[in-house]
Length: 342
Image 1: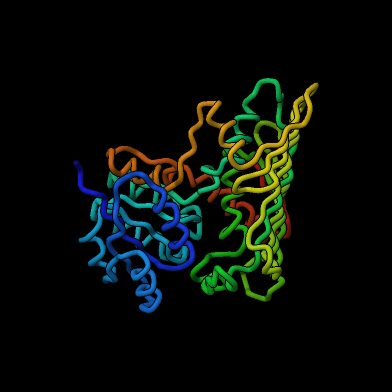
Image 2: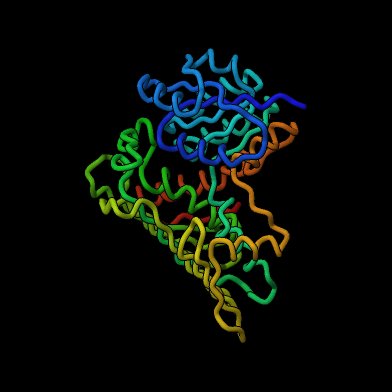
């Protein structure tokens, strides 16, 4: 029997804890071997809970087969380059980098090194979005006409997130649109295909320069579909993270009212409305041949088998380019940008 995969973590904050929950239900044999974080107390607390050793940044790479990069965004390119140079598999949190150019360099780095790589665009693994993708692929639905996408979260420098670095553009790049709604841009691209043009506005109501807490984007897809995306960082701590999406097709309506387990409401022309959530939603996916797995299982199974993982770094590039375009439009006072699908 093969030895369990040895897993290391760069970063021991909130998102690292979320990944340990995915790893806890992952059937691929593994053990969390080592962790490094510049905050020694945080690293010690994480290690005590997970049974890992607290080690130096370079030492970690001597002890692992695969690394999770959970640091602030500006550190991602440097760490990924170091990991790839050692031939280790890498899971990097989203966004890959503070700009699309840097993200493209990261994708080229892991491809050249030939290492298994995966990006933390985890909404693709959630049953509501996977089920919506099946619904949109049904020929009975017709063409997608419009999408209304609202994403809100309390400002993540407080509460359970405690990510103080997210108010610092030197470490985060920008605010809500890049740091949180990169997920939403990815899902829109994953569901609807390339974006042809967009216009956007952002606001910085909390007073942190270059850290948007409101972003509103209007997107036109190459298919002809139109979408609006509203991303908000507020101070209602009772609302940690919420998404609501409404999709209108010619003969189908879909509403995702909870991004983790639903409910998903949908109605085709001539049929009654249906509503699925939790186990019923998973059963409906399995009936369509879609056996949902968690991101850790997808990553570690690929590492174990020596094959590509998905979504790989390259899959994150369209959303990174869209984020750059949103900010370019917003910085130009909402000027429309076209030709994005060329």
